[in-house]
Image (cartoon, rainbow, N blue to C red):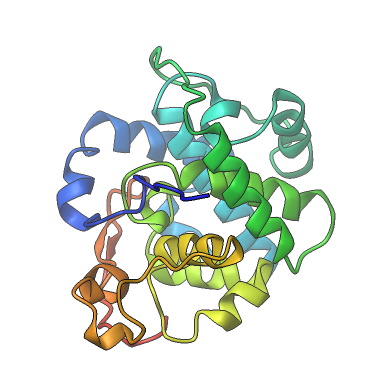
Length: 234
């Protein structure tokens, strides 16, 4: 079985984020503030519990700005979304903007990514299941994964994976871009190799796998991701 994965980001960063600037960023920023009471750039995420809530708010805020069903854009069922709000954002609500239709064309791919994450999760209970489903859905978007999760920079995604999907974090010891690493693991699990050469440094696609994941947050208009040199873990 050979998989074609068109959603692995080839560029991302400022160029792709530019297409998402304007009203969508302002809408997402407002939604984040509705959920948390602060702007995303002001969020205090030192405590793990605060970080987890920030991650959920970031994903939901961005998903709400894209239109269509908030649950579908976030990767959850309506029941799961309701339970999540009850646990983390009681007495608060946000609505999707616009009338974007939700496509199920990526349903099989979403399920594959979700299953990989579930197999490697290190947090128990509903939170880990919700997070796996949300990351899998957001991985279908075209930008860097941290951007399409609404996070402020790549370091937040690295912390997220290390905290909730520790086996994956340990395996990515060469600091490959997270979306490409996840898809590489999926291919290897199916007995295929995504890479054209056995040595990464000899591969023509090296920059696509290990290049800096710079860009502008799709939720925090004032947060710009700093450059991360290839090979440096964040």
